[in-house]
Amino acid sequence: MGFPFESLRDFLRYLEEKKDLVRVKGEVDKKWEIAYIAKELHKKQGPAVLYENIKGHPDWRLADHVLGTYQRCFATLNSSRDTVFNDYIKRTSKLVPPQLVDEAPFMEVVQKGDEVDLTKIPVPTWGEHDSGPYITCGVLVNRDPESGSLNMAIYRMQAKDKNRTGVFIHMPKHVAYILANYEKRNEVMPMAVAIGCDPLTLLCCESPVPFGVSEMDVWGALAGTPLKAVRCQTNDLLVPASAEIVLEGFVDPKEREEEGPFGEFPGYYSGVYNSNVFHVERLLMRKDAIYQGMSVGRPPTEGMIIEGLMQCLEAVKYLRESIPQVRAIRVLGTSSIQCVMSLDKKVRYPGLARRAGNALWTSHCGRAFKNIIVVDDDIDIYNDNDIWWAMATRFQGDRDLVVIPETLGVLLDPSERSSLKGEVREVWDSVTCRTILDCTQPLPPFDEGYKRGVVDQPEEVKKRVLSRWKKLGLP
Image (tube, rainbow, N blue to C red; front, side, top):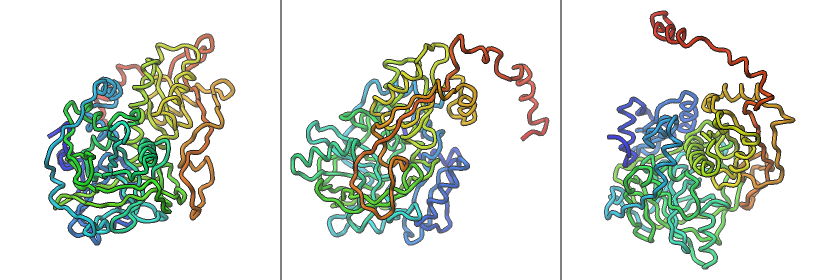
């Protein structure tokens, strides 16, 4: 059992073998309790969870915090922290389309029309002031009517009643362009939602690939083998055969309803929006289906980790085509809004940090970053103390700060405009101020203060102490 993991169950078995999964047999409430447990687990870099006793849903199991650490994401990609950027660029150089299969385990139970009842599924309520239970780990599948390309992505979906959910669609997300193309044709948009997919599918859904590139093809490239996919029963969409649950239905571009508030990725509640509505016409699932949740809200969260990682992988791939000195990027604080970028210290020239930051803003994958902190590659971007040290000792505001006001922002960033609870808003993108903070070491002749070296101990002393660490009684 190992890479590529072909289903959620395969990955859970793998994690259990690695002692990175805990089965919770005591009763838990889907309203807030699961969310709080996830919050505490993130603080401790804790294991994935499989809940086996959910209040009000005795026949269900629920998986959460599945990709809640970078280590589990790297295992899903068959990579490591040191090699993941190079591996991603190399593997995605040639896309691999999905393999169509006729059968899938989720076809065991089929509910049609009035039989559909989403209220029987243990969809959690995450935040205290959320407007209701939210599907946070549903893979939305759409097909562009003009190009025919398939799109997979994860969007928040408020479970409204037996067969309807809200769906938060807004520009410049790809599904918003697809929905607009259906609206031009005066047609409803077919949509499918797959829940409980293999972990690589979730990561691919968060990869900001160019419009028209199918995330299913990216899956095949990263796995080195085609994704097995099944055609839906009510439309021409394909869904991952590994899914535990599949919802089939449509979105009418002209129909809107109030949706929200919801505890979003910046850590604050969104406003109430006139959002689209997903009508579920068919529900298919395994007899013993596992529902999968994903925590959102104040970072760190599982959603931040997977979105941020894939956003940065695609960003580095884009940047290296013109700026090979870019080594790595990591989201900082929260996904989509702030990041730290590492540059090759050995191949530097004046203005490189500003050039790299501006280039990131021109890309689809990096357009949303508000603040970009640029450091040399002797700074560990996964170590917050290293980043603060670089800012404290290498940054001068009058010399190293770039400010660009009045640019396209992130709809859910609360610093951009007020978001009063109860006020219904239309979905649009907002305006922000972008900054580059050049925290790289100054080039000659302004590097005199750095020539004296970084405080450290001799390498032979380090090795000698580490070899005796346990004998010395050190923890």
